[in-house]
Length: 294
Image (cartoon, one colour):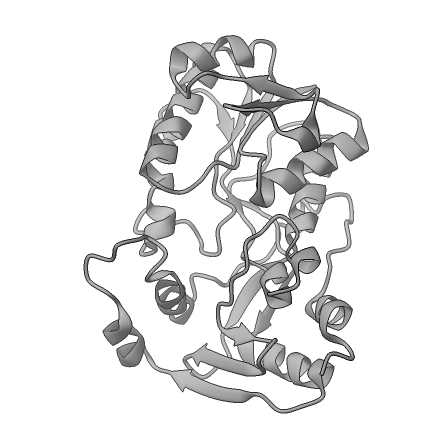
């Protein structure tokens, strides 16, 4: 099978590319405006993300996987990618989602809203498609350890394992989904071997767990108590910045509000489990990067 991947420079796309190439069962072409040394020999340079420039690159491609960014310019690129996939007779399209919420049309998170434009085009197309949801990446608990972050940028959401602090939405007893970014790549590589349609949404979840449970694990691994603050809906709503200069300014607060609405609570599809793939669990991940650290 010929697979095209857009957005492999960093993030989840990088892990997907690594996993597909490691398995070696499918032909991978990576769409990029520039060469990516880590994937030399697999990169197809496209001058621009326009329909006309993308159609030749997708010739003979069965599955397109998008991991391009979630902002206005990337949204334009992803819409063009969908339209080019239709014109090139691609069979399956996995849009850039990889989100921590359920991906509804009434999305409250600025970072995820740009996904809706491509989804609207997909709904009207003849393509098979599945919206990928994987929760929050476990790797952020490794911040600032670069090796633990993998291809992700340092980021601390609710639990700061480095400084033994936590700021938790609600009472801390609502479950949410967590997955290691490398596991997402491995899952996708295995899923490519599955015949037939993929489920929509495509839920790739390592575990569902509460913040209180996560803090307990972190305290045991670090060997010291954490300073914990709980925030209710009113407190969180008051933290939202009007007309923020960046879609990332309100990200943690918006995710917190989505969590209170239980929109971050979902599990993997039991009938589409990556051939019994065993996901990395929070305790094992934290022990790897924080055990013995003072």
